[in-house]
Length: 197
Image (cartoon, rainbow, N blue to C red; front, side):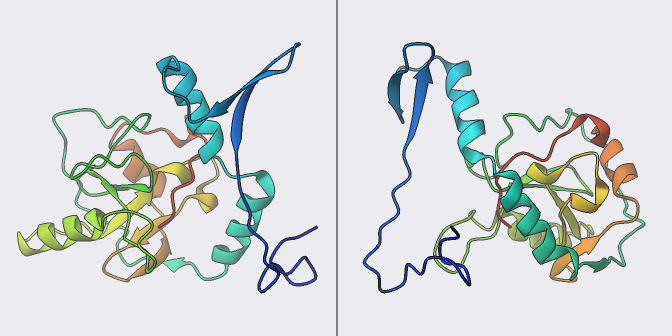
């Protein structure tokens, strides 16, 4: 049953509240531990966070169908990319301007990892991607494209690229080359992090 979709169960005005709870369940005795839970080993916590943040296959398919039709080719295919002193590491990344570890984008010109725009309802990031673009533009550097870290995968068509200059999702014909400049090989990445624009 679809919830809140045409032909599905309508939650508006129905007095329905959706609560989502997560637990770790141990087999074979099915002992469970509700999350969040203080004191979990760090690696187990990272695994839990990863699973919770992942979209289901059907949701990812829906998202892809909503955005695929509207993407256009960017005018910024020849980026001036600036070498970095440090290596870009996507796993465990956080925004260069705050402590957010989700909703992250990497600028394709300088490799700086930033959080997303703040949504109208206050969710999302802290606008650091947009602010970084504006700051660099004032300094005379063009940094118009950013890639959504959680969408980087072997299928280039599924990778989200935002053009600040064009204010839209775009297709970067040289995306694989732009990512490889920072040591990112899309053949070894998986689309797996829930990171709204």
